[in-house]
Image (cartoon, rainbow over all chains, first blue to last red; front, side):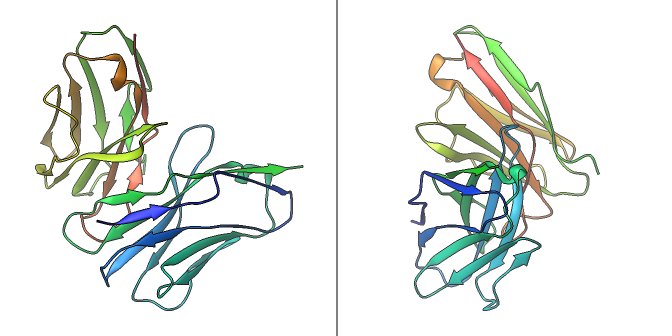
Length: 115
Length: 114
């Protein structure tokens, strides 16, 4: 069975600084997808970034980028130039490439951006 | 696009009552997922549909929970009878297809069972 671990329950960062959130996962699969979702206080789950395991290039979306280390089964999220609106809980998620589409979520990391 | 729509946003009910949560997926999406979020268990998949057909309901906690998708634009999750331990946030998500496509989440329904 696949598992996703986020070892940092809470983190904080000063506005405009850079912060990295950690995520590790365990799987015997070779084809899969990894995601970071953001959940602000509004509770809405918002997709931040997606990585396909067969792609070696790290995904980027504006200020958000990932460091995907397939051999180490690590998938960290880097937020550059942190903004107050980035304050939220961040979830790392794994999905096996199959016909199921089942997302396995980590426990989440609460990020506080301080002014 | 309006995104995934869920109703109600908040539901407070008493133990033993029937609760029905509703979801409208993004138009054109063929897969629909119901998740539950609690402090103790985090986010967990309850059931998912592909082309209106339930594919995997292994996450449904017990027989008190049931889900239907009568057409491509509507799904319900019903709890009968409800219990206090069912209190959680219930999310509906949809994707173009299952297996490889990104899931887009609705705003969730916060259920409180007294």
